[in-house]
Image (cartoon, rainbow, N blue to C red):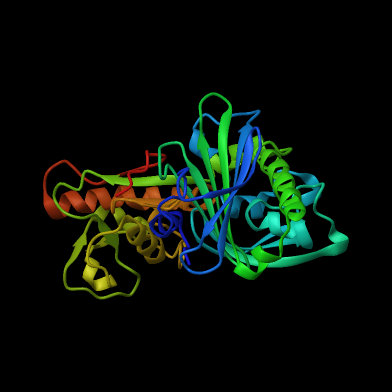
Amino acid sequence: SPCRVEEWFQLVPQLICEEGWDVLIDGAKSCLLHCDCPWGGELLKIRVDAHVENVPENPSHLLVRPEVRALYGNGSVSKFEDLQMLIHQAPGEAFIEQLHSWGLGSFCSSFLEASDETCSEEFSMRKSSWQRLSRDFPGEGDSSLCVQGDSLGLLLCRPKGGSRYEINGIFHVTEEQFKQWNSIYLRLLFESASRTARWFVNRPGISDLRSIDRSFYTTLTVQSCRRGLPLLPCPPGDVEDEVVTIADGEALGLDRWLRFDAERYGSERFYLSQYIKIFLANLNVHSNFPTYNSLDGNQLVSFQCVVRRDEWNAVKEAFHKAFLMQKKAYRRANGGNSAPSLSEDAAPRPL
């Protein structure tokens, strides 16, 4: 079964096409369709034409990352405690435990989280799933949330101009489940899911949540490595043959520097994410600083990495003070006037 949106499209090529789906219910601004599932059972698709009240500047930012929803609430005060992050894998990818209501509400929340009206704590259960957000796939401005765990589904939002979005909820059910549902049950599912979809993109507090999400991470970029890779501070007590020394760093304990060797750290090439992690560890600032090579499902070029803004703000003063000494050591080792520089908030460059 698919765990990422790209795998959904590989396994179900007709995912967003008209062909290949049988219509169960055709409404004015929404419809319910189904098809055979490649890995067994049935796929149901609910497609809803929704008006978004506060359209994000970047259309692909309609959906909010799962880790941000877990840390800052779901956009509604009454649902603040409903999500808990158990594992944070990468920006846009987390293992989430969340509250689901029984019955129809649970079924809808497999891909859309039940709304305030359909979620009742008196009859509720907690379910866990990997949730992976992706942006600008399959088209620019698209955003999706892939859910894999106790439930399996995909929420795919596509801008249609102005404040209009097409929201597609695709989720898996067993053949036995599908055969048991009569037309009345399907109609109830269809109406509930359609309401939930429109609520989900306009729920109270969602604009604030999108604003938090937009600045939650920052992208770091290293540049000007014309004469070789940047250097690393030599850890205290470490004895190395090839050490670059500078007198200016002696007062700060930053007089000894090492050439970065990717193979030494188990990599085939330079990755800024690894370099930042080792740099801060050698400074005794952070033993395992979280850095990431990907952002919202997109792998970045090796000279970029992503960090949480609040975590970076806590260490960047110490980093930049030491990195200034790195520049002096770099010029001492390689000659010339150029030296690597590090910038923040650069535009991400996917591979």
